[in-house]
Image (cartoon, rainbow, N blue to C red; front, side, top):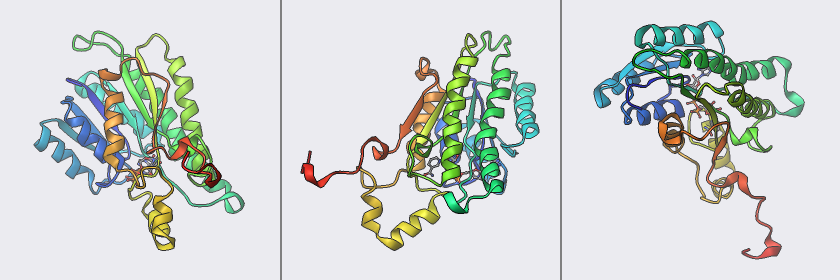
Length: 269
Ligand SMILES: NC(=O)c1ccc[n+]([C@@H]2O[C@H](COP(=O)([O-])OP(=O)(O)OC[C@H]3O[C@@H](n4cnc5c(N)ncnc54)[C@H](O)[C@@H]3O)[C@@H](O)[C@H]2O)c1
């Protein structure tokens, strides 16, 4: 990722996937990482760590990922400052807890706006910037990664609107990979399972209150995932090491979504 310029959304929380990904990518020595979020109380700390720990330009910017103007502004700034954009990790997301019968149009549309529209507008503006060439970057190219979820692939892993928004993310990425044909711009999703972050803390607490073993039994690895376990795959997808992976939804869930629950009748099979 040498010389790469990277933008990450939703990176403010030190226990989140965006933060872990910025730190992981920095090991690959890109030129600059823009760390952005709608909240910016922790962002400057992250930006400084990128600089001091890895000598990577860390730039903190307050960006509402669902605002086209905000997304365009940070993309334009990266282009104006460095003359290139190579990686966009559309990671910001929200999870409102309503289910089928108490969901509201307001919550549904808000979830779609923050989780899915944010990805579409990121793909639009990031891909236009990734096409720009210069002496330093003679060929169009880049990698866009969106954070979807296994909730977007099968039911039962998240609230109804959240799951629908993540299914939309998977679809947007599949379509975009083709729409960007010939431009050397790859678009993929990561689909995490249950990862211990601020987003899932209320659910983890509730599960532990009910029955800690039942919570662990949800997964063949008998644990929740860690943000770094998503960050390593996102970094791989961002780098040239994954140069032929395009239009994919990559599940990182410890095996949670791959099987129906064990049927006792079949013994240990
Ligand atoms: N934790 C999990 O189990 C899990 C599983 C699957 C997918 N994901 C996805 O991973 C992504 C990161 O979540 P996380 O688990 O690291 O939680 P997190 O709460 O640490 O990260 C989400 C970040 O998004 C930011 N954000 C919210 N609305 C925003 C907006 N409009 N603009 C910009 N930033 C905004 C929040 O401030 C927060 O920093 C989300 O898209 C989430 O849906 C998480």
